[in-house]
Length: 308
Image (cartoon, rainbow, N blue to C red; front, side, top):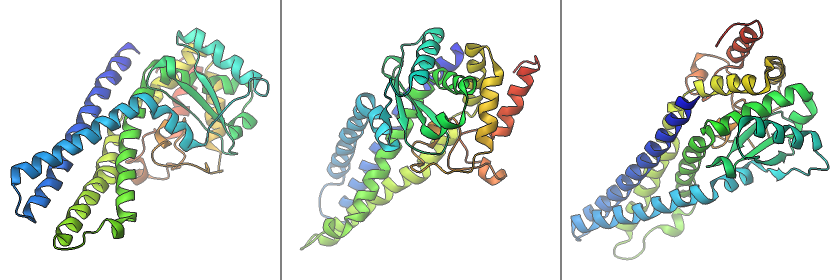
């Protein structure tokens, strides 16, 4: 597990650095387009574009570090769980956090009949665990403990940090691209340099779209699916009961209720990817989760005394 934690720390730095480089490339490319369509200095335009992009990238990284978790919770529609209404949930999270040796995370609930759960947070002392109302209604205490132990393991292994960085930085590119495309009419140039301005705006939107919808999915694919197997194993070690998580995954496998607010930005954080049912090989190529049947098979082996 310590190897996984160290690996996630390295990957977080790598992805932040990759994001900054991509942003610099976009800024330089947009500056080059402007230089090619105007009489200005090529070096000056490229440098200005790269500088503006660098400032935007640094702003995005700082936002991720300070407010990324709040954004994810807002997108998911999560609300703070009332301890009086969900005493069992609070007691399990507190006991598991103490057993895992991590600070007790904040607890949230999403009002959604689809059973699912996720953890988020850049640091363990600022983490949050979220479950849906459907999960609470479906699982018994033993199964809920297994799911929560899985999510606490993601916090300890710093999977939440890695996913938060990737999710918010890719989401930022998607948001900017969407804003530019939807406001293209108002952003189009007018007057003598109208065509040049329009071309620069289109180039910026196109490059951001590439980052959001091509580079972003490729980066998500780079996230090891083994982290789910490791979190499952850690959950069993923490709860000392493979049957709990095993029962929960079996029920999730039978679930046909779609998550209302599922999206590509947060799907990788869930205990089971809400955007796919792992129908075939083509789907599995783009999954950030291993198929549930594989995870169930591993847990069944552990229940029978086999090793991971």
